[in-house]
Image (cartoon, rainbow, N blue to C red; front, side, top):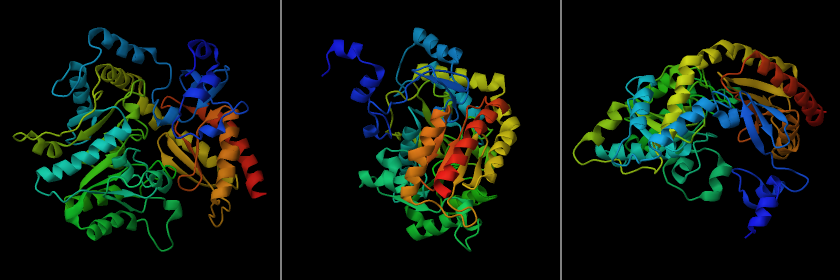
Length: 458
């Protein structure tokens, strides 16, 4: 154990390397020659590190600071709430802020998604939804309906239940065995459809998998409106409408995982609205508070809630901080910003310019595809644009972690260079961004991708 004096006098870098275990991080990569990036403050679309260097936050921290950084009024709502009621549980009790927020979410959610079960974040929301659909089917006389069908490469969280739905092999393997029942079908990567496999087959893959597993064993389908892992994979026309029909045919619930895609990321409060479908449950978090406080939720239809209103039935599940009054107050203030400052309207107005800027990079030989929706876009990087040949695992490591991540950050742009599918760069700026920020992004992306092309393609 370090002494108090040592801890007090050590630099932030030293303390971080000695004590802070960062998430999804190669901790061995940091030493005296390789600093941990330490972000100390933020304002609008920008953040600053401990050395005072400014960065354009092209990822909204982690797809979540939707209204931008530095909104003291939103943070103040939590502090003001603490003066009245700092905390009380929603286990068999209620308090005003949780009630008001649940009612507001229900008003904004599509259709009869009127019941809100609060969590502390996105993974907890997915975990809760998985437990909920299993319990629902037991209460409605179908106890064998336990399986969840998800999509390949999809990320749905890291708890053992959510990990069963996550479709990323290297995230799953270290923790097997986990909750049984996770099944997977092809995702909607339209850039890499197998020869002869039309986009119209993608939704039908769910029907075939449900029939293969046995409809009496399948509880739910879970899918993001735009799939994050793999690089902002958008659905083809009619995809979710057909998926809704398939679920109805087999008494399977449809979970729209909107931890990222809700609260304006796609230009609507919910991604299901963007693509015109009605889910049975929505999982959400991140932008609900613009991450000024940790909070998530499962939003369920009246039909899903109904069996839990009968007799002594109870959803025997919960989290200490689900519906925390301070978090709920922050969420209400965040939604006030959406309502009063035209956040959705800004995304809708400027999405074409954002996309046009990214499309302009197609002249670079390393750029294979540009895809996404709203302020949630990706560029897929390729070895050969004509054949769509991708990079090997070793080449991808060299490209993304050996060059791109560091080069983009050094030039003042925070984004994601990811290869959970094929290598991509993802951009998801705060929803207040506009043409000025798009120009800054291009000013960094273009020269860095030009150098990447020279390094990797010769």
